[in-house]
Length: 297
Length: 243
Ligand SMILES: Nc1ncnc2c1ncn2[C@@H]1O[C@H](COP(=O)(O)OP(=O)(O)OP(=O)(O)O)[C@@H](O)[C@H]1O
Ligand SMILES: [Mg+2]
Image (cartoon, rainbow over all chains, first blue to last red):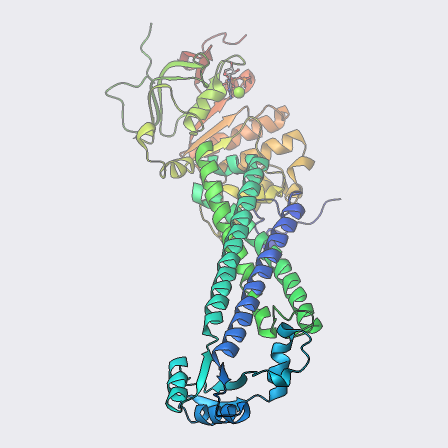
């Protein structure tokens, strides 16, 4: 029954037992927290991209409503306006919308009117601004006035502020949730450290009495919980990335997730998760252990 | 009342590694467990602490290995007032003291070899510098074939010998042992005594709490006799003592 023990091959064992029964539940909780943190991060990134997409679209175009004067047909007024606007610096393209399109746009508001042709329906000119130096609404208005056109420039930038405010709120909400989850993870680890110290009291006491410094003992718990959290973080991050990839495959820019477009590169955002989890756990375990050891001494 | 040659006084030499000046000690709000102890242990001395169960032997050792604090009086270790020693110095004082605990305090998840090596690892030694020493020491205390064993699988006497090996492995300046022969047969008891005497010969100050009158008699070493928390005798074993 005697096993040959070779001191030359001996490697020091860990001061804390490798496996404590508590661990699987703790790993699960931390992994779930990491999963939620990663989902929050992905959500914030996607919301940000959506907001940027919308605002790009909005700031890139304007609509001009042209009201024909008595001496002019709507078509020629719209044509003249488009021609004028195309000449304004900072305008990439100006296109008068056909009569049918204009009517289709206002039809829902008018209901079943017998003959729209009898109504002086205003014409629309869609203006696409150049990307680098977009023209301002005032510039467009000034140009139209000098040509004697009665027109209103519908500046989309009023919507822009709303979208950007919405995006900012989403971002701050995301950051808040993220911090909350981190704090919860830290609390869970602090709790687990306390339980671990209590369960390993005899180890802590022996090391203490043998002359181990408090920081040395605290570091044991710090290392242990950091390693646990890194593993749990990896699992949580992988699960979140898998879910993100699923959304991307299922819908991409359109389809299932038109409001929250997920890009493949977004999935990289989960990479720091294991490290961040390890860091939070290390700090929580270190502080908790140091406090408890000081009480014990 | 004859003058106690071991009593600490103003002219006491600096070579006292342990010195109690009118030290009392109590657990929480309980009455004093140790009362007005005054004595000193010169460098390289060898004493037993004797006395009935509950007299305070373990408590006295606890004061020295810094697991308890005096409620009154002054305790000096290595010439240093312990009460004034900064918190970050205490670990280094403890490293100079090897302790065989009455209840062993072995780490159950580690092999006997790992347990014996704990003090060296804490002191920051590298495995290669001590693995051979640890193996030899364990062989010497008769645990050659049990080095890989976990403490729960060791017999009482084997645990005791392992606890002793761990206490002496770091060549401490002071060796404290609490009933070190309580679980071993006569033969092993003598072996352990010889180990302590050998360490003492090399300069370690030894203090052993024991009920084992035979061990005390065979060693020919002086005793500190406690009764009800008081030091009632210090010096050579009196004629007809403990009979
Ligand atoms: N942790 C403790 N808390 C409170 N009282 C204690 C504690 N440890 C010991 N005592 C009390 O202090 C007294 C002295 O105990 P101590 O363990 O020092 O005696 P001892 O001489 O070592 O006895 P034994 O020979 O049985 O080991 C006893 O009355 C004991 O009940
Ligand atoms: Mg005792």
